[in-house]
Image (cartoon, rainbow over all chains, first blue to last red; front, side, top):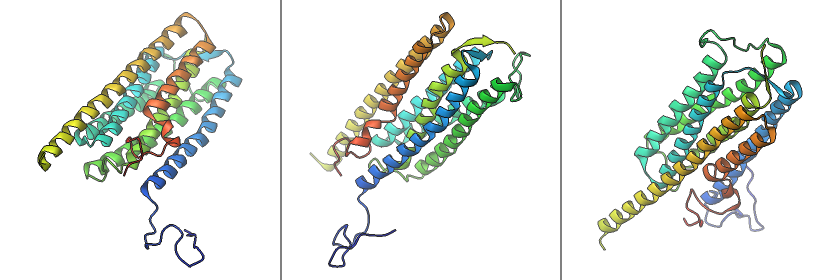
Length: 210
Length: 86
């Protein structure tokens, strides 16, 4: 990485031979980077939402409403526990931090399995008809939206596991725990996407029986 | 006050502050759960695109502000300790 040099040939950052960027400055840059990444992903999800309204109009396929409500609540609870984990890291409450991360992980996994196994019809629920990717525009949009979201959930679960494992080894302090904050922001971001996907996929429009 | 006493006091203060944080998180979690139920009931009774989108926006704002701490982008603070002291 290039370092700015002043007229006297010294490092412009300081005159004490310390080339480290101050933590507060690094933290600010990290936050900006993560939020810009989230913003860039918004365009991807917005395109999927645009495709849904263009192709489905004011209709929607008949989907399992109860299952969708349950999985949505599970993801919401996982977000609450992630917020608790971050707050615990800020206050140095290691036990609550690790326990909350475990609960977040389990809830996230249940959400993922609920969507992939039951909503996608890998495990049929009560012999009802399940949407397939080959079911025209309905199937294509539904699987593209839930599939793209599921990939982000998987990434989040891997992130949570890494942070939990590092937390277990006391790698974070109350002053320095950027990875925890980043993991929390990412997980809440996945939740925010679902906050919009849930009504757009399951609630808006007249049900259309395939 | 001795070192051990001040340490115990700081620890107790942290516990109290942590409890307050957890309480706040639970409060916003309950609001989110209620809004999700309102969303579901609204969808069952009327097909209001605007109503459902407003509810989704409201939920997103709560998560962005209280869980994701978006405001930290414009503040010079460290992890949850507003004021930027190190």
